[in-house]
Image 1 (cartoon, rainbow, N blue to C red):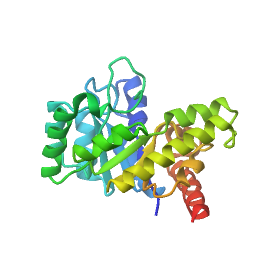
Image 2 (image 1 turned 135 degrees about the vertical axis):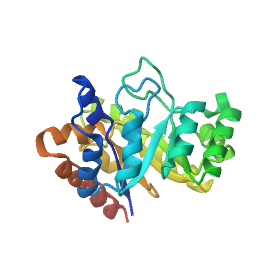
Image 3 (image 1 turned 180 degrees about the vertical axis):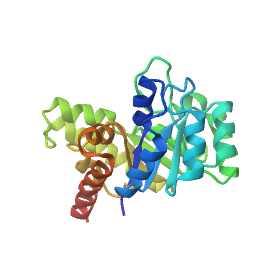
Length: 251
């Protein structure tokens, strides 16, 4: 059964705009859970631009839904994850000047260090995920370092979908979907879990939700944006309904 992980980083972004205490990401996590979220994702960035250490601690202690902690593979972040023990930790590339994550992690460029980080968290009982492009070489490297989950970067697909006027049958869109499908098949053949995410929204989610074997989609900005007008619980329920509808149609 396909699952939805809701990224609530931008609830904290709104809070930080006024340097105040609201809106509270923990409250957002509860509302998302009530709307049907199967998990909560937060990215604890090195510059703490939105989610901070206290948010992650409270989410770990107070929420009743699984927590996916996105982070750079730095000693500081590995220490934090090993101490807090989220259900899943996902290594992502991180740039100080980027607005959001740009591209997948280059495992091949730092395989030994990433392998050490994966081992430490795995030994602590944490499921380790890597955020990568649908590149066979990166998928093979993910398996070598011991990752249990690969989250495929869907940004190129989302941009192609938007550029094609939301036409899911446009050749560029079909090519991106096929690239993700092939990547997902390689991930599963290697014994890892196939997740996907980045820039998915209410218009482009269903072709990805229909892909064979996709286990979880992680979606944040689109849901938080919709929640401004409908409320978070309703926005999550609407996204979950679209995903489940697409997954049923693919069976």
